[in-house]
Image 1 (cartoon, rainbow, N blue to C red):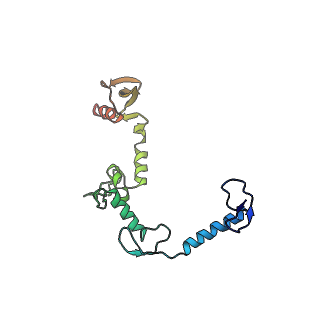
Image 2 (tube, rainbow, N blue to C red; image 1 turned 60 degrees about the vertical axis):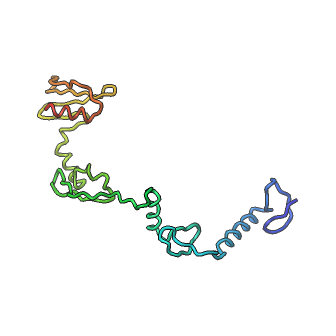
Length: 188
């Protein structure tokens, strides 16, 4: 026989670690423990880990606000202890290939700015529509010549056709698609 931790009545346990006579007693006991834990006053004044401002912590709170948490995390990540400033603002803005306007710089997308070609989705779409006939998968059409880039094994090769007749053929296999495309374009 065991004594219930909540109500004190004796009961026959079904398992060796059973502590309560009913589920309700277990729920009431755990609720009381949780309430008592939050009612107890803090024994010491807590300070923000990053800026040192005094704060009244709630649960496991370490920072006074989200900004201090972000700055402290960045400081911990950077081994030298300085805050990381990875955003490099370009000296001159790039020009849109379609309309010629400046491409706006956004610090949230700074890492992709060097690859941008258009100032907006509309310019990108319009440019593609105008030059759609030039590109079709791995085919490139220049001055009536159709250049087909083929993937053979681990290499890329190109052939140039005028109508259905083979006119030129790439002499060397290339390791990447881009190298093969550059070689094919340089031939014309």
